[in-house]
Length: 186
Image 1 (cartoon, helix red, strand yellow):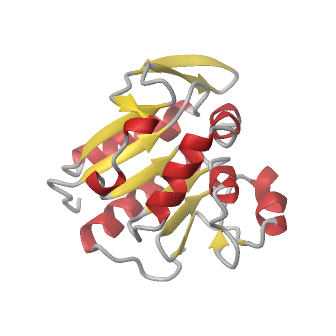
Image 2: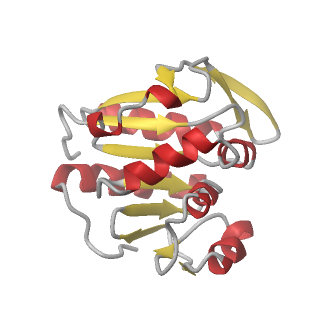
């Protein structure tokens, strides 16, 4: 497994995140050597969504407003329907995402989380993937939606759903390790 020792990664999420889309990246990134922090709207712990019911609590490390983007080597946005829908109405969260994208560091979104990329006006002219139900939203926002496990365009890394988590995590680790992203991976 590649090593990203000393890397710091921020996950931004709210209640209703898809359980495995936060816990799996957090675990795999930590196993690769990164320090991973979770930021939430109010700095309080959040509860995941697990298939068709509420899931487990995840500890928060800080408030989204207190995230210093220069302190992190990558940002991860888990999906689910509830979490990105809540966060895209949160100006502070959208601002942090937009500002982080401007650093050129890896910004990874899975499932419905590309809604946040749309809200931050980051998708125009980009090749991205997502959960199938929001591909029209991507297209309407000027992106080129693709059907593949991982799409990389510039510093944006996107995946479709929990089935893609291993490929998604590998793409994040590779991007952090290399410090640069190739254009588009399948």
